[in-house]
Length: 299
Image 1 (cartoon, rainbow, N blue to C red):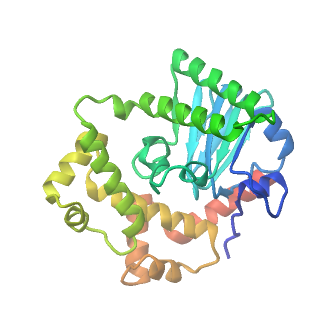
Image 2 (cartoon, rainbow, N blue to C red; image 1 turned 90 degrees about the vertical axis):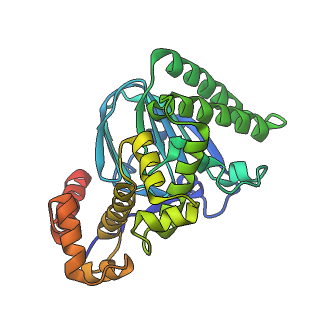
């Protein structure tokens, strides 16, 4: 049976059963000292931005391992599974915030995810910043930290404004947004496609089904995705199905047959063939290897 991976809210991290905090910013060193056992695989109900200014080690996000370097920024959306093994000198900033931190004043329920920074489908959760961008973001984070530690009037409003500025700066920095071939309209269409995948990937596996919902042709959809990120529409759908399969394999006690049913595969054998074709291992082997790796990391 797979060991259940814990899910944390901001209140959990603060050690409170109930709280009204929607935003927290701290230095990485202080955060790690406050949560020395949080390196094992876990997930959040909130968004998280991490800027590394020094240090090293590794950080695993949704089964992809990254080497930590100075000037890197990590952006994670709710639900992503991650773990880390940082070197002792690792420093920087960590920002946690709930979606409601923005939707409390913005009626767009997709406001945060409209920025490519937190895109778990087609984007990367890790990006390297140039020195100018890193310095600009670091100055903002330092101001946020100072504001957060005080009890000044309109504190939440100032923090919200500075956080939005950080998100915009980092989103502008993403390499994919720098491509002149992709217009703002095309990027908005891509965001809509990605949101539709997130909602319907269990039931809908064909690009034409999503093209119909977007009121465009399948060829148009494939051309858009290929131009923007160098993949086909079918690849994005398949990668999201595989990601969910991996999450269920390591984050639940469901049998492989139950997972196949949860993801609407015809039968267990079809799911097993699909999984092995695209990962190189069977679902059972993936589950056991991940369990062994997590056990080793916890020792």
